[in-house]
Image (cartoon, rainbow, N blue to C red):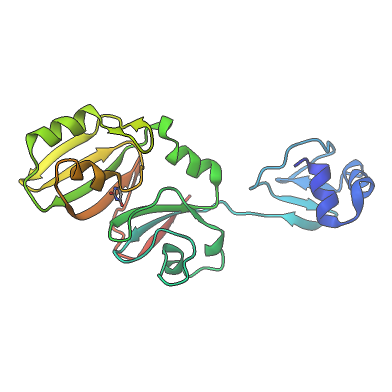
Amino acid sequence: MTLAQFIAKRTALGKRHAKKLLENGEVILNGNTVTIGTIELGKFDHLTAAGKTLQSNTPRYILLHKPAGILSATTDPTHRTVIDLIDEPWAHELHLAGRLDRSTTGLVILTNDSKFSESLTRPENKIPKIYLVHTDQAIPEEAITKFRKGMSFEKENTRSQPAIVDLLSENSCRLTIHEGLHHQIKRMFLRFDIRVTALHRESIGSYTLGDLQLGQWRQET
Ligand code: URA
């Protein structure tokens, strides 16, 4: 939406009045007077007209340590969601940049900036996500080789990027994947009839849990 359209809508005074405000130098965009009405207004631009604030949205970037049992969703009629863990008036404005299964613990990122969340979740960007995985059986060499090669996912008609596998014990590993397909890690292990008994996400790209305890969150700038 252009500046003139936005002002007209917000002030309910119509386009002519919006133009007048612009011409009179009464419109301030991010601290500067603007007279051109065709500028595209960004979601986080601060805008005043005739001394009245018309838009002031704060971009928010939240890192949260999700406990098991909490849903990666913004609303749910029966279960508690990650939003319920953020006791702030602006919590309902947030959306998730990638989900975790209900039983999975670890890092989730919430934001009101859709450009940012898209940059994290777009498969082409190949953002690494690191997980600690525990399984009900020993992880065979064959599985590790396949994970490292990349696997096909028929339902999504795609192939995973080569994963990084660090075997920690017979039945646990640190696994880095570059996609966020539904139940991806559980499905990777199920190909070898292995069940994941515990799954924990340590990081997404350069974002890590740090010292966040289960259920806690912090805001990044
Ligand atoms: N892979 C899964 O199977 N589950 C998750 O929660 C995340 C990745």
